[in-house]
Length: 326
Image (cartoon, rainbow, N blue to C red; front, side):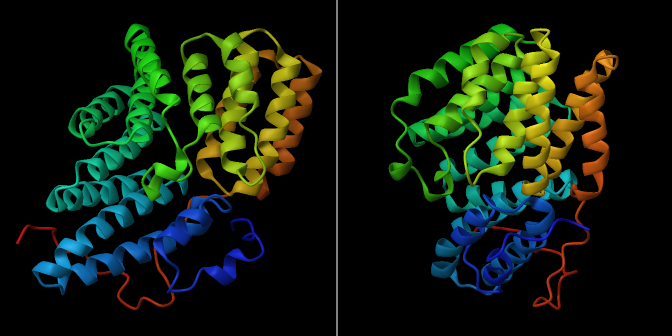
């Protein structure tokens, strides 16, 4: 069982919920709760496209690409990376058929993030660089900065520090030009604190925890429990790199509570990695206390989502038809 949805979220999750509405709900609830709704919206977009004429296809292809990107993101957050990659492949094909390189870049950036978290930094770096190269001429400052951050993290995780530093520096030069109100609607969440936290995460991956600390500490914002949990995990890892075991445990304690609020398997997995690193200091009282808290919290953390079904969709098992140009 996953956690109960935030009051008001259940009422909003009707068959008529908009794509923008589902994106906003992703701030409040995790993929384990929302994965089925993302898959449902994607199936609706596929069916609408399959019955449309040429004019309708031109209008619906970008909708399909956006729906696929969000469905893939929710699947990854629900602990279903294979479903996420399938959705991203469909989204990339739809963006290409629509002639929209920016949407294609965004889909590739999301897929890069999935591979980085799944332990394939080389593949993640290839996707991030491909997305950046293909969309940079048309992309907003925010999308370019995001793709550079994806590349920086992948390079850092893959043991390529110079490439990571170059991408991080290039992303930093764009940060001042990012204005959330002028970004595409699917980047509404990208702002200064988020960009700073992504910088901090990569700095920890590069083994530079001291400058990362203030950037990650500011990432815990009201209404963003998943980000707080994920970046809290990176902050705890930074404290461990500095030998600050007690501080690492205190941060991990708070992040664990945020992971429960978020209902995100990604966040839970990040904190499991923190506990694995803390095990080297098992003799420390703070580590024993955190282990006890994690044990008590285990039943409240999300588990992988089940099949992507929706009560309003009686054709949930249908395969998606191919996206082709007309």
